[in-house]
Length: 299
Ligand SMILES: C[S@@+](CC[C@H](N)C(=O)[O-])C[C@H]1O[C@@H](n2cnc3c(N)ncnc32)[C@H](O)[C@@H]1O
Image (cartoon, rainbow, N blue to C red; front, side, top):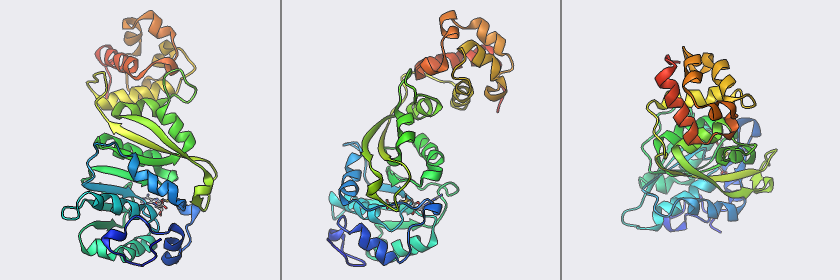
């Protein structure tokens, strides 16, 4: 294992996570969403979950911490061509760890391979990136995921397992909901690895999972994406009601001025079903009907 504070390009990818945390000189604080990955085998596998044809020329990491994953991303970025390596940008909110990353990976920073951005990932303008690989801060993982998904780039993201299961669920499954439809609107999403609590220090309260998002256009058309997402959100607030009642009861969320006109125009079988049984394409068709007949106003 390499334990040098800076290291040459050839040394990326083998830093010991415990040694990194020791050198950083500050303990990960769970109250600041800091749960560092300390299992080398998991760390080594994560970059390999990017789709085979993903463009690795500019990898984005959100939440660098003490740099164990950053080290693996630098290895992935420099693997193909030493003459024309890819780049890594890390966004890290905590100044202590941002400073440590700049120091630990000084050679990469000086060589233009690594940029450390000390900012909150929710506020910062995202840099251009070709793919994102991150062990996300769980307190804001949903907000970050829905900043990243519309960028239509390959993503490999660590989430709480329960959140990951909701992202990938299919219509009719108990975990299926607004999160599933919204995520699957942008990408094919799949859980590629479940990660036990023991892989982290300090250990989180729950299991984690790595999700791969491979961007693609949906197999349906929506004329107004913002309205589609708002309509899905509205209907899932009434997931146990019939679609008929859900459309009627949630006009204040969906923004429909004339929900009754949507009910009049929709198919009876669809109206008697429950939101949790509609696949994304059925939601899209109903949202288009709602736009046509329900006079939606801006949220
Ligand atoms: C789960 S840790 C992952 C650390 C490291 N990548 C690893 O895998 O060991 C999440 C990291 O995100 C940082 N973080 C928390 N909230 C953030 C935010 N809003 N914007 C940017 N970074 C944040 C934390 O300081 C922490 O370093």
